Image (cartoon, rainbow, N blue to C red):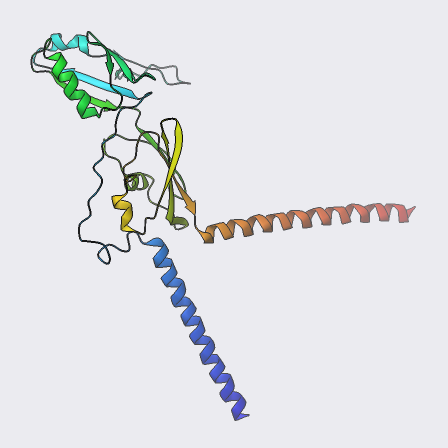
Length: 275
């Protein structure tokens, strides 16, 4: 009897140790899959060289160009007129005027007042600003030109807290900025496999980020371009849960059908038996 009790006590201790080990492994796995840039300060240097990137103007971009100077009347001809707009479904016109934009053609050109057609594709906003400033000096004293891409948008989809389309107001916008605007990944987001989809010269290219690695910070895809799509796929736990839920729903549906069929057959049997 004592031997049996001793054996049972040993098994209980072994079982407790296994539970403790599993708990530790579970916690460790959770940390390893949730924390960002885990190798910073370990295998990587203290400082990383981030890719120097500025977005360039492409066909279908909408450019907001504003020219100012010491003589407002002299620069008026070089500015697009302000316009009020009406939102679809509304009867009132917005009283706040909005500056119209220049649409970049499929040949990469815009039509600018007085200067005519200008090739702008491949230029940064700063480069186009410098080019316009140089050409406008023949008409305006000390012109100041600002250029902005008004339709710089990126989309963030999948396992983030706030998926949707983001309007970018700065020239340098990284994948981390996009995730921040989407209010971070959910606990179910796969941080080791974040997909970037981009259109380049009429072709779709893709790149995958591992947000747990510092290599993301030095990737040539770190800064986003117009119309980029960032997709965060669910992790294994969420995929398994989804498959289980679908299977459970299917089983419930099958059981419901079977019960309904049995009920109908029973009703028919009672009706026939009653006759």
